[in-house]
Amino acid sequence: MPTRSAVSFLSRARVPLPLCPFVSLPSANATIASRLSAAMPAQEQNYWLETINAPSVEAAPDLPENVDVAIVGGGFCGLSAARALAKRGVRAAVLEAETFGWGASCRNGGMVLTGMKLPVPKLIKRYGRPTVRKMYAASIEAVDLVEQIVREENIECNFSRCGHLEVACKPSHFNGFEESAALIEREFRHQLRIVPQGHLRSEIGSHIYFGGMVDETSAGVNPARYVTGLAHAAERAGAWLHDHTRVEEITAESQNGARKFRVRTSRGSIAAREVILASGAYTTETTPALRKKIIPIGSYIIATEVLPADLAHELSPRNRMIYDSKHFLYYYRLTPDNRMLFGGRAAFFPATESTVRQSAEILRRGMITVYPQLCDTKIEYGWGGTLDFTLDVMPHAGKMDEMYFAVGFAGHGVAAATWFGTKLAEMISGNINSIPFAELPFPAAPIGLRSGRTWALPLAGLWYRILDFFT
Image (cartoon, one colour):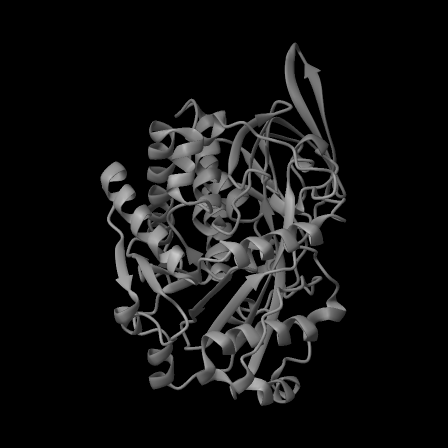
């Protein structure tokens, strides 16, 4: 069994950054633009990675020759699956091309959210009440599962049931909140609280929104500490963990009349009875059938210097996880040490590291539009990553080419990836037969949007800007 501590697998890797949507500054803030450059970080730096111990340099453990389950991808989904499998006595190995948590798991806002990307009325129209009832229950169960794992494994990751606040960018969006809240309470017995515009200052120190909707069930977490804790937990349970082990080929072969997989990696090969594909937006051509269904969407985040306690309280009196109602949304929160962490969707096309400064400046303008109080606040961190969207904007899981997979978390991955990884482990172990998302039709992405061929992503970004203008 491996002896290396899982915390050593994480590193402060530099990665390409995505562009963010442009947000025009009000004329009253015109002079702010001239002060932006002095407030920007000189290079990409991920705040979350600064909160964990620096990795030590140790030799990677040797690959086992045979396992029951080989897991491709070492983020929330893969590590949750490994933990759950190992606790059931299943021999599982996680194969991560970079370092554990290198992908979306360490590049997000640390929001542990209920619900899904699409609004419930639209989901019901598409899939029907019985199916959506199961989906929504799963999203609540996912938040509970994260808390359960944190408690059971004693993971110090600043988990807090602070709730989330969705804010309405238009009066029509607020009307939609009221419709959704009534429907969710009636159909799912889950209560959301509507916050009219006149009472919104009790939730957020901004005047630009038309009301809000609160779900007290959601939570916040430090994702780097959480994924590190998951790695420790999976390792303690008996899973093999292998970073810097890029999967290069997966083939099915027969041994004594039984089907097995041969997984060839940059560090040797391993035989496995089952394979879980848990690489999300970073899925490669090794599994082309899955890759062609993934739309990689960039997302970018900045974090301010530590704010005075009174200013932090003014910005977010209840310390919510906050996001707005646009397609090209902003999402933001306070960190445990009172920084404002402010993120947004990219212009859909991942950019290069040379755009770090440009992207941070654009996103900072959006932050000042929401919070003019921060116009003179220094930005100390800026980073980006890639999310896995699907054409129908839904998560999908099940089996493809005889391999298990889960993909399409679309910004809800802290909770959803943990839940899907655990459920795939339960399916392999025979504890459950299926999950609500396994039977959904899973359309392929158009060629210009799918991973590796993203030339049409700017057009998709333009389309969402048009939707935000007219809806």
